[in-house]
Every structure is written in C-alpha cells, then in structure tokens.
Length: 167
Image (cartoon, rainbow, N blue to C red; front, side):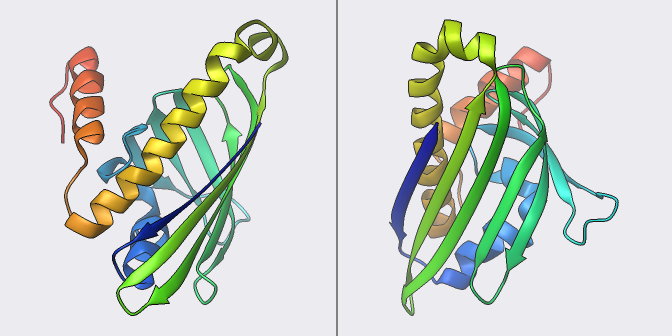
C-alpha cells in the first residue's frame, strides 16, 4: 500500500526540517498518531532511530538517510505492529518562498499476510486517514507552535487508557 501526500506549509522550510529531522525523537510533540517517542542508538548506523507508541501499536524505526541540504529524510520500521510486515517513509521538504514550504510524505507499507487478507478493507482506509491527519498535524504545529485538536484528543485518549497524564 502506498500513501503519498503533499501539503503547503506557511513557514520556512528550515523550520519544517527542524521539526521532522532535528527533533526526530520528538514526533510525539506534534503527530496525533504518535503518543510517545524517543531517540535510540542503532549499532552501525550514523543516524540512529526512534521508538514510538502509535495508534497502530508500538513501532521502532531506523533512519536510512538524512540529507539536510536536500531536506530529505528516509526511515524504515525495524519492529512493526502485527498488522504490518514492513514500512518505509520518505519525507521531502522544499522551500517555495522565504516563508512558505512544501512537504511531501511517501509511505510504502506492506501489510502482514493474514491481517492484510482478513482486515485489509478496514486497515487501509484508517491508515490513509491517519497518515493524512499526521501531515495536517505537522502543518498546524509548524505554523502555530501548538498541537492540533486531533493530537490533543489522541493524547487524552491514549494517556487515559494508560493511566498517565498527557504531556
């Protein structure tokens, strides 16, 4: 399953890149699909990775490539929820003007055979909707320095279930 989305953001590309890459371990600050996240070291990898508690389950990612000049970030999941077999994401940030940028996310997900066969009709639309919301969350966070309503609701639900207080 491939999901591709491009969105215009009313902020400099450098600010978008800072949120996406410089603060890579802090996706939980803005993404409604990520409730907890932190950086992790990956042996033999210069970039590292992150672990996340997401709406799809716990995931672990490794950065494959990060190019600050081209503002391109690519990572893959090395530990996936049961519904996924593999996933790779590529983010591109492109300056449009001094205070406007464009962000593109290309996600390639392979669903696990049995869950994909039995529940693919349910999983695919939800995943597409959640990824589109994540990009909207990024836009809102970069433009306002605040969390979107979707992010606030997601955290409230997640932390209530875990018995913790939202960040």
